[in-house]
Image (cartoon, rainbow, N blue to C red; front, side, top):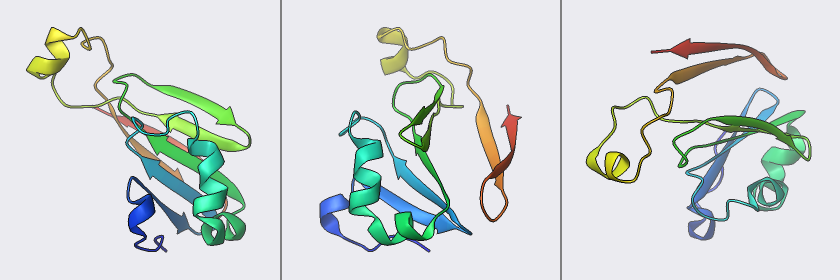
Length: 114
């Protein structure tokens, strides 16, 4: 189940996978507010979920953090470095993709793909 097509929140989206609420954001906008925005902007999804995840990128590095009960997975990028990244020194990331496997209520397994 995807969120509504509200143009005001087009910078983010959320969906329900079983009873797992997952919010997606690039990570460059409202970065310090994302976990606080999830329950307000996506009330229906948040209320139906039993566990919560936020997936973002932007920083070319990875960090996993439990923020107010929402598991925030900041992911790097698997693509080769481009000229902008090389120029600005964003060259030390792992360059991995992740596949997350969920059951009805939570994350069960994570695969690193390279």
